[in-house]
View 1 (cartoon, one colour):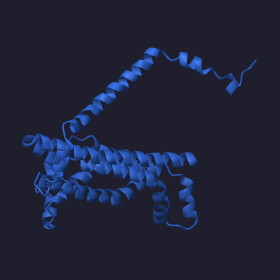
View 2 (view 1 turned 60 degrees about the vertical axis):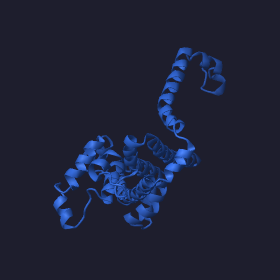
View 3 (view 1 turned 180 degrees about the horizontal axis):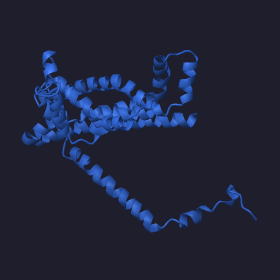
View 4 (view 1 turned 90 degrees about the vertical axis):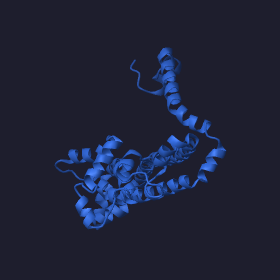
Length: 284
């Protein structure tokens, strides 16, 4: 008798369970426990060694509050720049094929793997006083090195690839028929981009912006090399933590705890957006 792949012919669950070796299940559990412990223990140690009183008092410190304010302001500007410029760029990369596209994608993603010191040196070589564009910036009376604007430039440089990758994936996942229908109904390409592509891809774009903002918030090396660490001018929270590390380790712990809380909030937001995307896909 030929057994069709129906429920009556499936292997009993007990047989499937016996087919899984116990040693492999134990190996998976052990590997998961080691991974979780290794990644979570250092983060937990920050809060174990930082009392809530110290955490609250650090927010009353002018240096800490100035660094936090500067971080929030610069990352907000950097995220806005990334969204305004990166969204149409990601749409072009997702919807067009052209010679050398692989090279372009490699260049865009290169900052993801550059060491922070190299990123800072690269920014100095490009936008510093003696850099490629240094003379043009000087004639335009634009100063970036040791300026707040330099912090924004460094944050955009290291964070934009995160958004571009997710935005490109989001646009590439749009049903091409939606875009073609919009054009058939008389909409221009710009109108299709604004009224169809962006709204449909919005969950992915939002998640990408959250990741880019989190990366910009934690930026340290390129900012230090390019903009320096001047209090109330270029000293963001990561730079303030580095300075406090040598002078007041408990204060550094408290600032680190604040940054962990903010970063965790970003990850939770990304998870919520991802869950919304999955739910929307399942409902269609």
